[in-house]
Image (cartoon, rainbow over all chains, first blue to last red; front, side, top):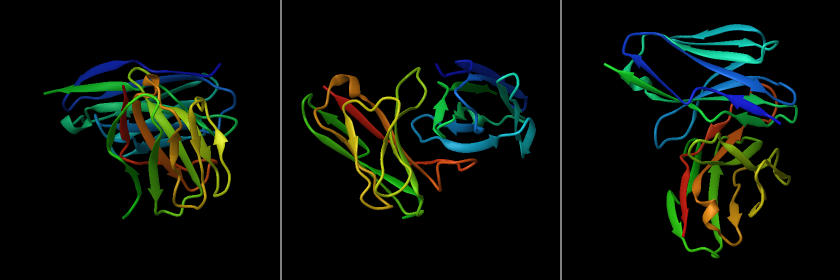
Length: 109
Length: 114
């Protein structure tokens, strides 16, 4: 079966750095996406990785290792507005997204 | 409008009733999707459409039907609602289904079936 694993919840301090991990087992791989979802709102796109390595976009970076079936999202200089759920999703061999359950990130002052 | 809209925002429905959730996008995207989101679970794909006139089944299609008569609209119908269909429903669209095409999401419909 297909499976995406991420921690259920994480807590971090404003101004700090946090790393959210995602491991996956899917039938085929056509890229990995990270989305942000604030409570009661729709998911919004953060990043896309298809090749191994680090993609940096401002305060957010995403890393992929295809051989290990592993990705992480790195958030720097945390702000209170970063409190949200972070969703990892893998595009499988049918080009459909398989979603993890999401990691709820709580930012404390 | 700009983006993707859904209606209604929320609905309480008696079991056994028929219900259609509406989704419209103005981005001229080819691909559209319906997901349900339940607490503790990832988004699950119900049905999708790679282009107008075609539809496909996702992971959890039972009890739902869709149509794609044109590019912009992708309604989801529950023929006879059951309490297990209580969920938040998101419609999404993307330029195409392949590669790095990100999906854009509507604001969601919160459906309660009693």
